[in-house]
Amino acid sequence: MANRYYETQKMYNNGQFVFNSLNGYNEAGSAQSKITIKGHLDDFSIETLYSNYDQIAHNLKVYPTITIYPRGYELKGDMGGFYHPQYNHIEMVDHWYLITILSHEMRHAFQFIYFPDLYYATEYRSVRGYLNSEIERDARGYSLDYCIAKGYKYAEEAAYNREHEEKIELVLQNRLSPSVLELSETYFSSNPVVAYSVPRNYHWQNYNQSYDQDYDQGYAQSNVVYMERKSLWGKLVDGFYTLIGCAGLLFIVLIILGLVIYLI
Ligand SMILES: [Zn+2]
Image 1 (cartoon, rainbow, N blue to C red):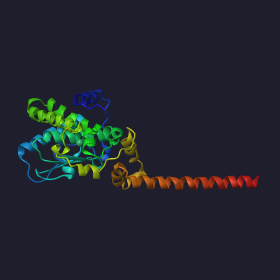
Image 2: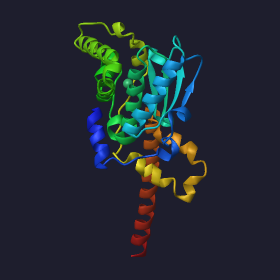
Image 3: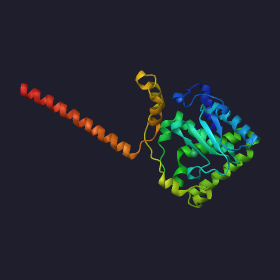
Image 4: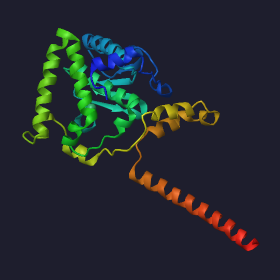
C-alpha cells in the first residue's frame, strides 16, 4: 500500500488512481456540506477543520461525512475518532491536535475505499494488536506526513505525533503499559476484529450491480449490509445453505441417473 502523502499524490497525478463514489457514499463535496458540528466549536477550530478537510479530501479522493463532538464526549473504546466504513462516516471528538485525528480517520476512509483487500485483511483483539496492525500504522504514518507537509503551522502537532509513535513502540515492546495511551484493553478483547478476504475491486463489483434494474429497489439498504463484516454466525448460516444446495443438486443427479439406468 502506498502509505505516504507524496506517494499518494504521485499516484493521483499519474492518473492511475480512479475515483470511486461508492454508490453515493463518497460523493465529492465541500467540508461545509460534509461536517456536522455538535455543541460548541470555536471559530478557529472550525476554520482549521474545514480547510484541512478540503485539502485531505482532494489529496486522497475521499469525501466521508463527519460528526464532531465537543471535548469531553466519549466515543466507544475511548477513541479520539472512529471510522464507520458502512456509511463512510467519521465520528470524532474535538481535540487540541485536531488535524492528527482528522487526517488519521480520513486515511481509514482511503484504505477502505481504494484498498478494501488490505483494509479487511486486518485482525486484532488487543491494544497491542490494534496498534501494530498495518492499517493503523499506515494511518498514523499519513497523519505525521501530512503535518510535516503542511510546514511550520503544524510543526508542534508533528512533534506530538513523533512522541506518540515512540510511546507506541515502547508499548509494543512490552516496556510500557497500554494504559499510558489511554486505550481500553477490555474494549479490544470484547470487540475483536476478524479478518476476511475480499478482492481489490470489491466495491466496483457492487457498484456495477446498482445499475441493474433489479438491484435498484431498496439498494441503499442492501448497500449498507454488503459492507458489514460477516459474523461467525453469518458464515455458519451461509455454509449451511450451501450444504443444503449441494444436497439438493446431488439428489437431482441421482434421480436422473436412476432414470437413465431404469430406461437402459
Ligand atoms: Zn485508526
